[in-house]
Length: 108
Image 1 (tube, rainbow, N blue to C red):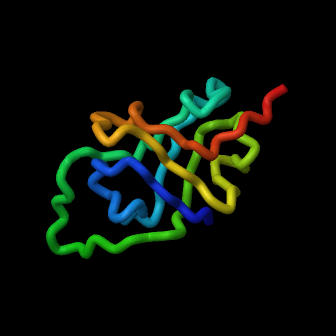
Image 2: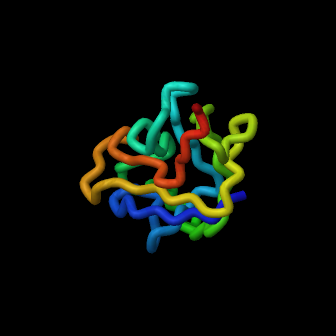
Image 3: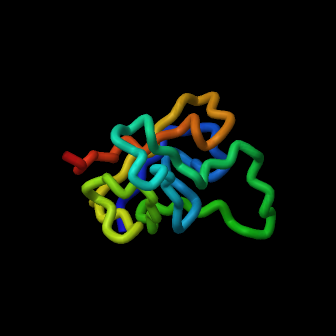
């Protein structure tokens, strides 16, 4: 499982640049992704965290499911990178405003 750092400050799951989910999904549009901009964090949520009976616990290491088939770190939809960085503007309004900064295209 990769260590995850996230700079998408307005995601409801972001706490001090770590994710409070124990697993995220990175969308890479199957074989369509050829660069970082073609990816996004499908788990992004801009709404206020509403599970009041669940503690907002930081997860430094998370499972990452990924559909970016061309990424060299993707092995049968599981990210095998040691570290992953999710990035986006502080004003992201949807998952497509985010991106996986760790994506590396292995397609020739």
